[in-house]
Image: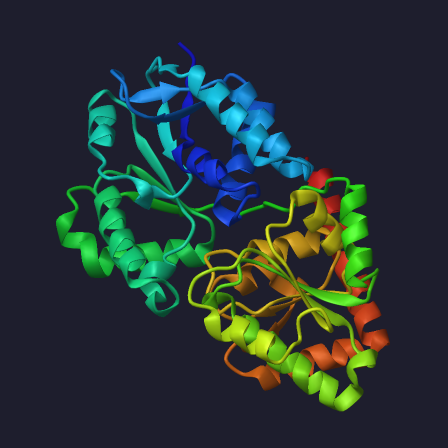
Length: 395
């Protein structure tokens, strides 16, 4: 029998049941799933817990249709609901093969318990867990308390069962080892191996639709006329920081002499101060724009036409918008905290997310000194091309 990777899609299915666009974790999970399937079509089996063999398998071709609908920019709740109904009809008992693994890449904390994993391990199936971040443990102030409690309990439980833990960055891997050493070392019969596999995920470049271009025209933003900030608009993303920087830019240069600021992402937790502030000041629709639930096609267009991007989050496990920005050859002004310097390397300009003056100094120089911005962009593209060339040469 062929070896298999039984990839858990419970989180992915539940997410697309309620949303028509991906968030960070689901984007990583879907890209991993279909990249593996493209290269190794006989290796990946999408599963959810349940059934006599403790796993239910699904038709990956329908899952791919769901994925293509989401990235198309033209999907609807009706279309997705029909496809979700179709994929559930393909549900079968998974045929468990030896020397295979059960791999959980999504949100592990959504499960009520992990008894099925114990049964899978008894059946000889190792459990591999992918961890995106430990923000609920290390940066609790940015996450709701009930979510923190659930995460910590779930993480402690899966640590007792995992044979291998893969972290999305060296930073998160170190965080996991520290947690095990501080909290779990005496409670684990066998210490799981912890390795890092830094994400190579970039935003898949897709062709924007007519509606995407029309939206940008309606907002009055064109190539190079705005700075883009991508990510769920929640307190951890530090959105108000950029608003304060832009207020200072406007006071010095005038509103007509600086690029507009565009936030792209869903509304998230505990960010009322940001939304109340910009609405009270009546900034939205003038020099500031909010784009919520953007399809993949619109997101691609926003990256492509931006002057540069900003990602000033307080804490991340990775920081997808940084790597996405770089994949478009766009310079990113990023926080110097947690994992973000690992993502951007020498390609970003770094600021202190706790000091708006730090952000102002960097962003002001990029806006005022056009030569500086052009040089930074050229160096970025040359370095990326050089790195790509070296990679292909080694292959």
